[in-house]
Image (cartoon, rainbow, N blue to C red; front, side, top):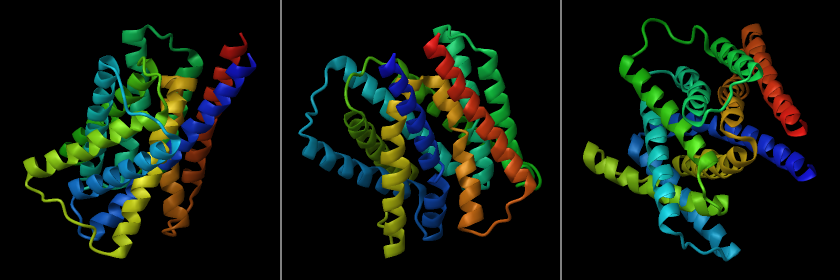
Length: 298
């Protein structure tokens, strides 16, 4: 029982950490777009640098790379899912404000809960439904009125694809038979992602370009370390120890992070609407944590 309690705490902290780290994606991406870099270049250096760092960590850990056929198939699926999730999200930033994209992206907890209920017969409790409703209401308050006029339909489709593939990524990590460290999993996932950006660059006719300035290299390093390595490593532990649906719901902290970044770094006003949205999201997080704790002690 004590071990389960410690696993719940680790899973909760990792889910929160992953959400906060992943929520900094627009910060790095938009700054690199402003530096003149195209989407495949931004993602290639994000994933490539992250893969190099993970490789060095594994070298120091004396961790082997050998996997069996079943593990290889699962890792390949994870890589493909994360390629689509990241690429469609970053492309959507060209068609709508990043805050609006983050709002639409947060449909993935609902998608996760629906897939778990339909295909894995997971019972959706009233606490889960309430937490999803509170989180969605909170996210809508964070970005209500951020856009004037009609949203670009292509941008919306891109974010929906990102949300779907991100939900599937969390579920595969949760339900897969992988019994290896998070570093080893992400060694393969990041390799596939970097390779995928090379393929996309060739197919789209957008050549890979070096970061043009020291500032651009700084933002590439940020994207490699924070929303790539840190988020992906913590996501694995969160999905394993907490489960797919609670991990997805705790992802409500992603758009919250974006709001706080806008307020603290860019001086955007912190209104009553924003504070109410954050309180609703925190209430959803508390319900998830308390619900998970009751389930373990039952």
